[in-house]
Image (cartoon, rainbow, N blue to C red; front, side):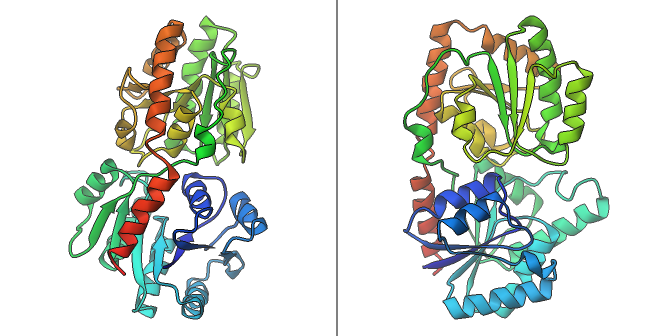
Length: 364
């Protein structure tokens, strides 16, 4: 079974990281095509000799990109094309390919719930995104959802009929589960890993950390990742006089090294996250996770058992939860950490691949 995975870019992100892990297994002959941009994970896979190629030099010309992919599929006898991104151009390419490759099966992989942030702040773009997504659904042989929350959201916002659907949770590599660093000197360190974009709510985290730091000057906040909001977030950090306590380290390939520096992982996303693979990774490394009570995150975290769900979005409630977590006695912390590790072990990359294989076999 040969599967061509289409992604818009191959930098360091949730989708890209998942595909990188999948490429290390041979149960399915997976290949990756980056449509518009390359990136760190693309370079890493190229060095490892994986089956990846880029169309970034085609200057986003959809007709040329479609022709290149069609030629590749016919030459390589590709069985399935899977689209992982939800933008206008990626969906249009997907729809165009369907018309050109009638003997290939088409899969739309939904990594996030439908949300008002789809398409950004432009109302016309949001309408177009929804229209082309519906058309992509109509042209699919299979829809894959990464959580129950994603499936619920998509069914509420789109017409899904005459197409197979399945649930495939994301999984993490065993390297996150093995050899966990249990040092206690990291307990007051807080970490965020992810893109620095408005919808991720990192500004709320920084504002919440201000209160934490005022009550505990030993606390530190590590922000791993990059994005369009980085400059604004650094300015906010300066304005709040937190430069000595907040560290921006940019994108990092070895996130384990950074997770092992912290005791608390905060994922302050304000939109309906589909799942949150970085949350699972953090739990596996012994971090106590704190997130807002939204989207697929509630399928991972059981409040007070293996982490904390903050009901109200805002810095005040988040700061309160952070301070309460820091003040937990050692036995309570250890119990939550062990529950978090136990939860993480349920979401392995092997289970993800096994579920994907069954789903793909159902349409071949």
